[in-house]
Length: 196
Image: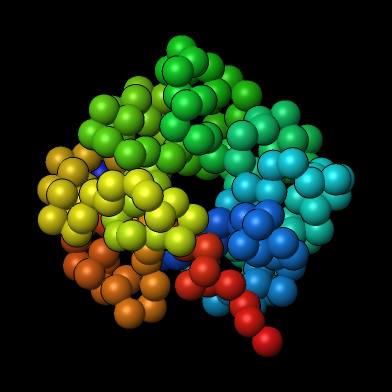
């Protein structure tokens, strides 16, 4: 990615992103409250009662802290509550590239999940703001999936035309390996879950 373009594009992106998960993080409110400045949140609680209510509560927590909230997989909900963005699972990139951007305001973030260079190319075609590339390391949520590994992650990230976050098995012990690549940040569930 062009260095000047990269600096302009990534200046406003968070450095770390918490992905909510209805199994591993049934109630994400305390974890979102505990996030430091410069963080982001992707709401992935897909099949929970009153998902819209949870999204509004999280947005109320995020707004004063200037933490962007992206809603996963539901452009209508993201737009209705005034979320900061929309996150797409990789399979949703099968639509015509500009399909999802039509649902969003120009300044709204669009992120995508990617697991290969081909998916990263689709993210660029969709005018995504950034991509979550995974799984970098072995992960509890997908224990039997082959990992990318840090070397391939670094290679794919350096060749990408979109800002990349590392996801999958990333924690406070190995996040610096991800940040030593050209990734703009890292994303996690467990490593960013608040435990009291």
